[in-house]
Length: 355
Ligand SMILES: Nc1ncnc2c1ncn2[C@@H]1O[C@H](COP(=O)(O)OP(=O)(O)O)[C@@H](O)[C@H]1O
Ligand SMILES: [Mg+2]
Image (cartoon, rainbow, N blue to C red):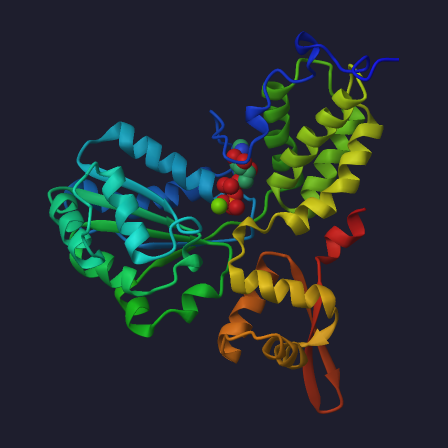
């Protein structure tokens, strides 16, 4: 038997298109987030009357449509009017005021950025944005390393809605009190999708990704169940793609229960590896937790310091909270007599139950 005898021919691929299974794919229809989108729109509405908009803080667990719903509203707004700039910045990638400034310049087509410092860039940005109004979305806003960014935006841009998105609902309270009071933001909490919603969202993606009949109904059903348990649509997208690839690798023309089960076995690995939302400190702390599972936060901090960790205890604690809300770790309260302690465990309960 030749090495490649079992490979499906190009024309035999099980996928119509793998793109709809990508995390960054923006689906043509967005279901189940109508209220949230309406709320976002309401905050922007005053800009249409040349008044100042409301700022908005959006929070909720990862993988439940915060980014996609907000981007949808921006697209609609962009189609509706030329009088409002729509800016979207992912702060995971652009985490300093200077990087954010350069990104905004790029989006508003301002080219003279060479050898200009951050203050100068924000002056130019204000000069351009202040001719109109602006909606500025900072996604993964907790990744911003320097709060000076907020002063630039709050003080120099006149008519605006600033939307801050984060998975970490504690983050806003860690901001400087003056920034918080200047922001005066409304809060919008995204709730995880129901089972039905999860199923419908994934069903739509399946229709885009696979020809009819390729995906076994039971295989689809267990994938939906796992995605619902994880409360993360991304887990479902990952499983669909992975199951399809596993089936292709064994030159099968259908995606069976067996392929879905194998994909599920790989999911845990994926979840813990999907650290794209972690900064270097969080990553370092997560590695230490992995090697020292079940310590109290205090003991963990001692280990962290021994290993050269430089964050203050309060910053360290923030990182722990953000790892928890990212569901990389689980925190367990423990009461022993009069003393209370928090145990830090690697991984997430429901994900461990998964495989
Ligand atoms: N209502 C929805 N309809 C279709 N796809 C959705 C919906 N909600 C989320 N998704 C998809 O799920 C994935 C995760 O959503 P995302 O907006 O990135 O989550 P978050 O920003 O909350 O982490 C994306 O691929 C997104 O397109
Ligand atoms: Mg997001």
